Image 1 (cartoon, each protein chain N blue to C red):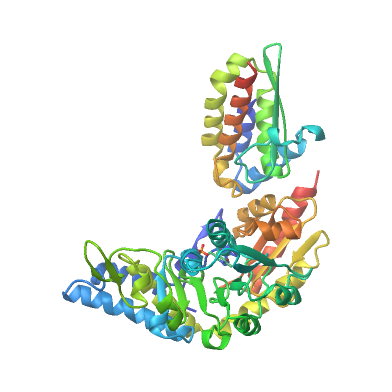
Image 2: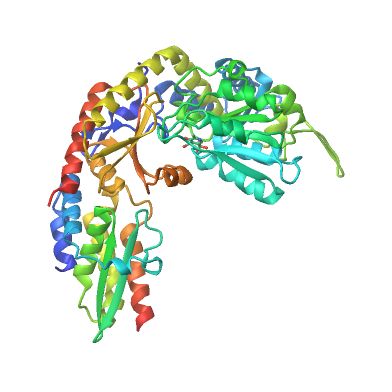
Length: 135
Length: 397
Ligand SMILES: Cc1ncc(COP(=O)(O)O)c(C=O)c1O
């Protein structure tokens, strides 16, 4: 699913339903390999434990991720489903602004008390960093 | 009940139900007004100017010192205004350890808030001191028999919480004080959670020092208290240097002011101290014993209702202060608090500034609800309903 799609869906919902929808996204996040749950894949700065890996194949990005909090899983699901298969160059040049718009339009940050820091912004920054390290 | 303007507020279209009182309490109208009046009517620095405003501000500020002293059965000179419990404990960690020798021992407990652990730990590192920790039983009470064994002639300081901000455990300070003093050691009590809940009498507890925060007792942030026995404070070296804490300064030397001023360097948080005075007046008018019974009843009721939820584990003893920490099997605490928030319920999730304790309990995080003077049984019913709904959302497919 495109990030825009999730954005439109979530923006139309009141706070409670929006959070439940985010949790639903979280439940749909694909399994994450147990062996990848290691220190170097941890997302730093996240209040709950979260992992993220990236693989670049034929010039395209493929992420997988995990968190023990469903809300964080929801964020990961939206970003992973939204960006997987995207061309590296396109990802690096557009991802940040796509997420920025997503945050502004959905106002999801405000509805997420667990995140003291800017959770989504933090995750995308790490996604970008990890891709840069691979190309 | 004195009114709390903020409680009229809506949160996501719901009435606010504030169950995060152990983090900070809301402020009654009289506290807000007292601070506002100070800034509008008699804002001036204290202890300095010879003009009417300065005189009024100083009188108001010093009157609060007397109020605090009476409130905990101390003398005025034994009350030092700080910024918080944290600052009070840092002051003690710094000043009390100055004259200790290498390998002297400090006893803490595993249930301490970071603010009563990190300062001692860091100072111990700098000064080569040894820290020993009193463990807890599975019900969340201290293992006093182990404590008795840890206590030796090497023990110089024992510092512990009166009421655990995670477990709700109320520690037997009076009994502990007797033992600590029989070894000639100094007893420090972190009373951040107990002062807003129960009558504190420092003479009866016989602790040497006691620390608490204004903002957890319906007063403003930015003001804390350090109580110390006068004879001990007189010998204790100061922590912060600057204006107001001096008697005489030359280019070569400084002599210090008497207690408590020796420990209050620089312009204090005057408005906040005045706000604290109003908070104490509020607590006295409501009557601390009435508050205690009310909160105990709420806690007992909430415990009973929480224990009906199968997947839920409560931490801490049955007999406790007004707070309950719990976890839910296979559900992350943050997901629950985020969902509760959408129903207007303010609760807390995470390590609650007590990481070592959570390691002992073998959990990464807990959910905590904590009660205050304004909470009601109906609010707890609503919270339990909302919690059950949240668990369903997290567990459903
Ligand atoms: C038991 C205990 N001690 C100390 C503190 C620190 O208080 P403050 O942050 O006001 O300095 C707290 C506050 O959370 C507490 O609960």
